[in-house]
Each structure stands twice: as structure tokens, then as C-alpha cells.
Length: 238
Ligand code: BV8
Image (cartoon, rainbow, N blue to C red; front, top):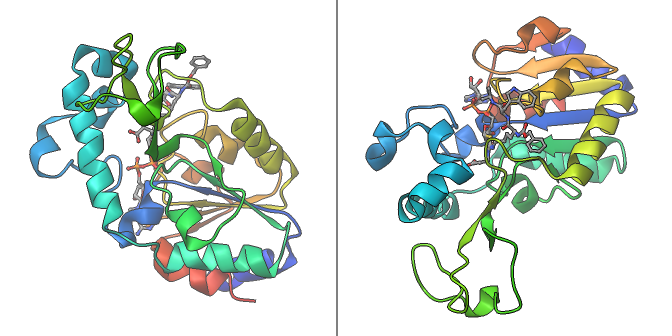
């Protein structure tokens, strides 16, 4: 089946790629739904990654993100990230990369124009609409940092559950799905919407790359049971 998918990729003029946390697993980043490691084992990310949780306990949620940022700072893009970036560089305009991941590893691998549907864990933004006194560069130190003028808090620039996705990225991702000849769905359980819905609206063939079953398997024209960093370099070689 890998040979067949390789042939589909060579023939495809417009390729959309949707990645999830499994894309970064071989870089050493635990997937979103893997049991949280250590200190956070007793928490459910679904509960922590919300504005409600942050407002209820800013220092705890900020601490969870600080823990994840610390982990991400110590990892590197893997062969799968690098294969996607290299393919796009060899074939300008042919591949659109859409990611649910917030770790910035696709961007660090050299992928340009990444449609980051869930934001970027390495950036902050104001929790409430910033006032003239809110200057991130002079935020008062704290967990989380805050505006000494009005008390507004900084928060991670990610999309929490219940928050709208960045409209421009989502529109571009939906267009890429509608126009593609082929969509690779890599390392996602297919649980989180509207991102997962892209695999159900793809115009072209859908290929799932995942060592385990996903909620999107029924929508696939091909399922490759394997790891991203192993399969992508094979599939994306010319
Ligand atoms: C919204 C940032 C509306 C935060 C994340 C229908 C339509 C619209 C919304 C909904 C809907 N139904 C339900 C909803 C609500 C909700 C949702 O989807 N809930 C689910 C859980 C039921 N969606 C939302 O709230 C979204 N917002 O719809 O807003 C709106 C509109 C207007 C105005 C106001 C509101 C927002 C969703 C974004 C949430 N934020 N991340 C943070 O990171 O802290 S999502 C989070 O989950 C991560 O980004 C992660 O990427 C994402 C998805 O998970 P996966 O990537 O799939 O990761 P997972 O661990 O599940 O799976 C990993 C996979 O990798 C596994 O399959 C594993 O087998 C595989 N794997 C492991 N190793 C490898 C591998 N694969 C390949 N190679 C390997 N080596």
C-alpha cells in the first residue's frame, strides 16, 4: 500500500497535509492524549486547555504551559517534519501544511506558510482586550506575567477548547482541503473539531498515517499503520 500511496503522491498536483500531536511524538513530545507525564498525570488536558481553567487558576494553568514550553525547548524537528519541509521546497506551491500542533516544530524544520490552526505555545497574548497600559514587553513578572497598570494577565497564544480558530488559517485550510488531489492525515486521533473535519471535506484521496486506529479511518482511501518519522521520508522522496 505504501508503494500505491507513493504513486498517488507523485501524481498529485495539490497536496494537503493535516498533522496532529503524533507528528511530534518521535521528537519526544508526548501526544496530547497520552497520559500526561509526572506532575500533570492527574490532570486532563481537556480541562486545562480552557479559558475557564485559566481564569479559575491562572498560576496552575500557566505552570502547565511553562512545563510544556520547557519540554519543547529541548526537542528538535524529526525526520518527518524535515521530509515535509524538503518536499515543499522542491515542489513550490504543491503542498499546503495544516497543523493542529502548537509546538512550532514544522516551522523550525523549515516549512513555510504553515497553517497553525491551534496557535503557538511559544507566544503569549493578553487574556483581556489590552488597554493602552498593557505592554507585553514591560509586563510585571508573575505566574502569569500581568499588566501592572490594570492587572490584565498574559496567556499562551494557543486556541483553547471553546475558542474560535484563527479565521484566516481555518479558511485557508478548508480551501486547501476542498482543492486537494490528495490529503495526508498524519498523527492525529481525529477527535478535535473543526480541524478533524478537514479530512472529511477533502476533495482528493485521504491517506491516514498513524500506528493506531483513529476516528477518521472510515474516511480514508488508505490507512498506513506506521510512524510519521519513518513513513513520511519514504513517501515524500521524489
Ligand atoms: C471551536 C491548543 C467554536 C491548546 C488544542 C464540532 C465542531 C466544532 C467544535 C466542536 C465540535 N465538536 C466538539 C467541538 C468542541 C471542541 C472539540 O473538538 N472537542 C472535542 C475534544 C470533542 N473544539 C473546540 O473547542 C475548538 N473550538 O470549535 O470553537 C467556536 C466558534 C466560534 C466562536 C467561539 C467558539 C477548539 C479546538 C482547539 C483546542 N486546542 N490545542 C493546547 O495545546 O494546550 S487541541 C489539542 O488537540 C492539540 O492541538 C492537539 O493537536 C489536538 C488534537 O489532538 P491530536 O493532535 O489528534 O493528538 P492526540 O494525542 O489526540 O492523538 C495523537 C495521535 O498520534 C494518536 O492517534 C496516535 O496514535 C498518533 N501517534 C502517536 N505516535 C505517532 C502517531 N502518529 C504518527 N507517528 C507517530 N510516531
